[in-house]
Length: 307
Image (cartoon, rainbow, N blue to C red; front, side, top):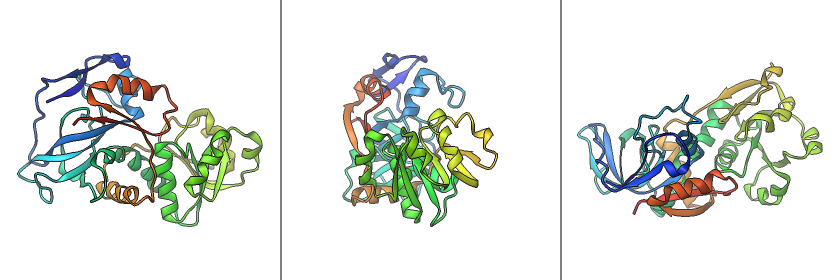
């Protein structure tokens, strides 16, 4: 098969596109997917550089990538409900999707809804699960509670906003002052310019913060979480959270949930959930794609096409 492999930690140039990589071995409970596309996520370049080595150690040569969409090529003998030729999508918790073939446990796979472009489907799994689980699990948000979603125009932030609104919560979108007009498209109950000290001072109290920015950007917001509230985060926790003993800190990492992926995929298809896709690269351009993404400011998802 074709794949992008990494032989040592370091810069994007360490990603090597190869055309003679052995096909993955498929277990009895797995399916083999002929990849249509995968996507670039921040965890990819953090794993590549070694910055995430403590949480996600690699065995070299390694294949990165967490999202996959494509067509089922083969199924294990214990697999039910999925057939050869089905259009599917999945989050791969063990990476390995920068490749033309991906073997993945069938329980992590869901069908691509009719009417959804299989290429675009690859943009969804990791970010929607991260945003949704941030809201539902880390923040344990309930209907009519209030939540501030930081980085609300980022991919994970958009998913968190969608999750919170679907739950019936009161949602404030936390963005930069320059993004306030753009953030109106999210349909939230309010918008906070996180780089405006006066706006932060006057924001009022919330039940929870769903944090996708982390560290010092979130610290000034903690005093606005009610006693007994929660700061849920998917990034580096605010360094001063210990100074707010009345605020519970909950950090999560995404785990597979194909039913939630399907729900978001249907909403994306129907225009209820918007996730910008800003660039598409061929799989052999993975190094260039990661370089672009790592510079920041992409403003949406970046896809790698394996077809």
